[in-house]
Amino acid sequence: QVQLVESGGGLVQAGGSLRLSCVVSGRTLSTLVMAWFRQRPGKEREFVARISWSGDTTVYEDSVKGRFTISRHNDENTAYLQMNSLKPEDTAAYYCAGSIHDWSSEAAQYRYWGQGTQVTVSS
Image (cartoon, rainbow, N blue to C red; front, side, top):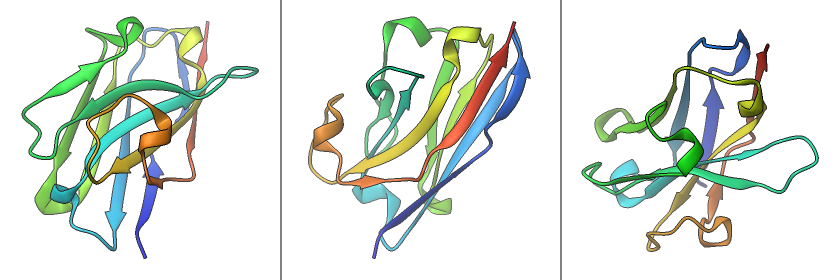
């Protein structure tokens, strides 16, 4: 049984930073494309960032480019999302997700999901 567990969310002031972690169990991390999605209040779940199986390729949603960094440590079975220069509009529940075969920004292509961690950015 594959499980993804996020941590690291919290309350932070605008301009601050947080690092989200996603620990994967039940499957070797190197076999998964990993991504982060978020769901803002009243909005649909949206893509934030993804990273390839080996970590050599990353893709970001335009509004987080230059502020967020996705990374992975396959030997630790953990993926990360470093979030800097946070803005109130980044307030959302953040979810990590894993895909076996698909290199995609579409949530439907991701088989494995964490339970989410809340990030709240105050102005």
